[in-house]
Length: 322
Image (cartoon, rainbow, N blue to C red; front, side, top):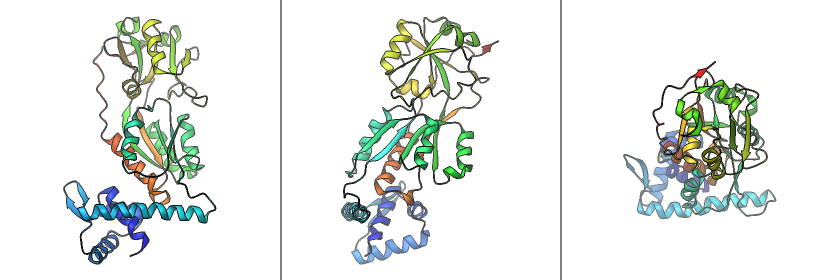
C-alpha cells in the first residue's frame, strides 16, 4: 500500500465521486478505479458504496479514512520539516472584500472544523481588486469577493493569474438603502441629484478596505460619504440621521443591517449598474494546495451553492431622472 493511496481515497471522500477525484488528482478515472479496487481487495472490504448522492464511506471505510487523514497530514509535516520549516500546520489565509460578510465564515468554519484538521483559519478584509494579486503572490490561500463576469473573464485571460481558479456562486446587485421615512424611499426611485444632495455612509473595517463600490466611477464626483467601522453604527445613521447607504443586496441581507419594517432597498438602476456582481471564490488548483485547503474549498463551495438569496421587496419602478 503506497502513501499516495491514502491521498486518493481522501479525494474520493471529499468529492463523493471517482471521476471528480480523478480530475482533481490529474489521473484517468480508470486508473483511480483500478487503484481503489486493488486496495479494497488487499483490505478485504469495500471502502465506499454508491448512493444517489455519490460515493459514501462504509463503516470500515470511515475507520480507514480517519487513519488516512492523519497519515496525509503527517506526510505534509514531514515535507515541511524537509523544507526547514517547523512541523506545525501553517494557517489558511482567507481574504475577503468588504461586504462579502464575515458572518458567512461562522457557518463555513463550523463545517471545516468538523474535520478536526490542524492549523488555524486567518481572515482579513482587503479591497476586492487586491485579492487576485495576493493569491498570485502566495500571500493568501483563498479569496471571496464580488466581481463582474467581465472581470472574471479578464482574470482568466491574464497570464499573471494563470494559476488562479475562479468559482462564481450567485449574482447580486447594488441597492440604495434608506429609512422608509426618507424622501427617496417614499418616492421609490432615484435621481442623480439624490447622490449629490444626500450623505451616504459605508462600512469599512480595515485601512486597506477603501471604498469598494464597483460603480463609483459612474456616480457623481460630488457624492458625499463617511465610513464607519460597524453595521450597527450604519443602521443608526440610516434610521436616526436619515442618511443613505450603497451596498449589494447580499450585504444588506447578511450584515444585520436590514430592518424591512423600517427600511427600503431600492436597486441601483441599470443605466448606472450595467452589470450585476457575482460572489466568487478564488483559489489555486487543488493539485497544488494542501489537504486542509481542499477541505476548506469544499466547505465554502457547499455553503454558497446552497445559499438562497431572499427576493427583494416589490417597489415602484426604479429609474434615474436626469
